Image 1 (cartoon, rainbow, N blue to C red):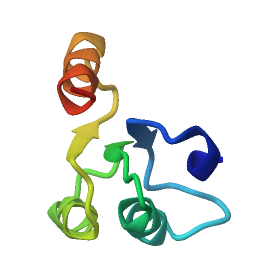
Image 2: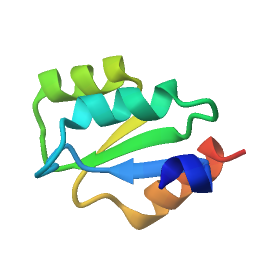
Image 3: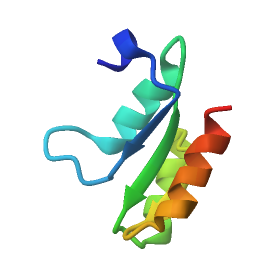
Length: 79
């Protein structure tokens, strides 16, 4: 879907039932027009944050994310 729509940003959780979330981040980042990937998750572990960032996540927000912070971040990333 992302290859056809070419989003500027993608919001995703680390809890994906049918996929490796870090692999998904890497796949997005390796695409010809990579979107900024923002992880929005309840996983508070520093290791998860570090792994997501190393995989290419532009930012890592904890749930519940503040709506104004999230909107501001997406606006900055989509410029």
